[in-house]
Length: 349
Image: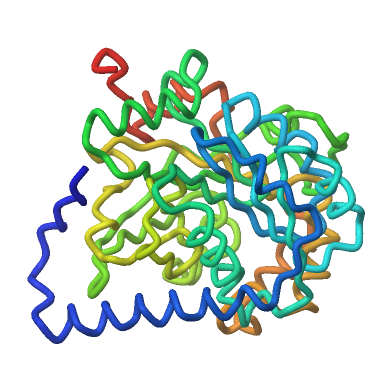
């Protein structure tokens, strides 16, 4: 399969292309060095099947979400989970080490200094993901796409291959409860969509950025509640979570952008023509109130974390994210009808 055509933007020129090549090489070198920061504690890589989608995750203290998360992606057909645990002290590592389809590494190194886990995952993608379909997600992200009730990840990747696509982009869609954050109850193993029943169907805006030609999507619930006075600082909502990986690729900012730059053309945002899905963001489970206070102290999640103290304080104040324009979540087909993702042409499969 060929790489996607570059977006219709001014050409980079020789100097721009050269700089991005060296940026990608620096990221790959960082990944090679980062392997020394990780210790394998559950070595099941010999049991990785020759076929199937591999899931890559960095996490810390996700014992509440893990039972449903693992079950969800197993039912979708994930062949193996490659997980980096960054110093969990809630039993997450113990739970993961017991799973026969999970290979687990641990590190106490700085999440922020590792480019928010990308250096660690970069090494695992180089070592185990080359030539494979790889799904890189957070523990609070659930991938949905049209037709998923009848077509798992293997069928999805076969369809993408037939259409000449090297990956699937997605909008990260915040789900939230009705009522003050933290007032709900959630039991490990429960589907978080039973608690987080609402989302914002819009507005969302997208611009294409130079020099990497990556999309930048913003808007939605968190901007409405926490960044209404400074929308330019609201979270980035576009991701490229599912890629047929090559060891010369490198994620740059979470899974929001990728090098080489033409890979960013895989996703053209809500309402676009490219095949796409949605990552349901289950951040706002009841534990979010206490977790926000902890993360504010840790200062690990943003390039300039002090600028986001107000964001953490806003969550810790336990606001009600629901408003009269909130839409009750039903299923993936609903999101396709709303234009938040592009329906897949399963008739071509």
